[in-house]
Image (tube, rainbow, N blue to C red; front, side, top):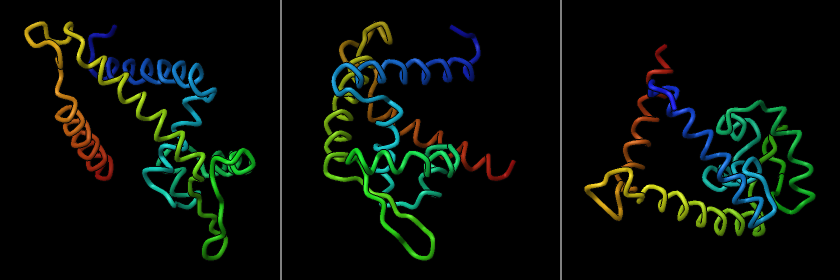
Length: 150
């Protein structure tokens, strides 16, 4: 583990992604990469390819390349929008995966945050997950604000 918070945060997110990938493969036969794509679409959709690419922090080409297979597999719908825009949305199959798998991942991560090693004086519920989520959301907004002025 690193002594710098910038590295520690990165390590934590990377390990959470690896853990989530293992859970999703074992229980649902899907990757975290697919889940993240679908979960982002669930949160932001319907959305066009450019908007989804921005949310996922990948290129428009990377999203466009995945769309035909995800449509063929029944995870998403791709509809023509205005002009050349393609608007993406979840199918019931995609929404069901996000709801079920997302709920399980939420429970797994919440359980980790209740580990008494995080605060031996408070157990169970070592970390208030609602407050943590509020702090992380606010921190994300602050970073985005700073990024727009950098």
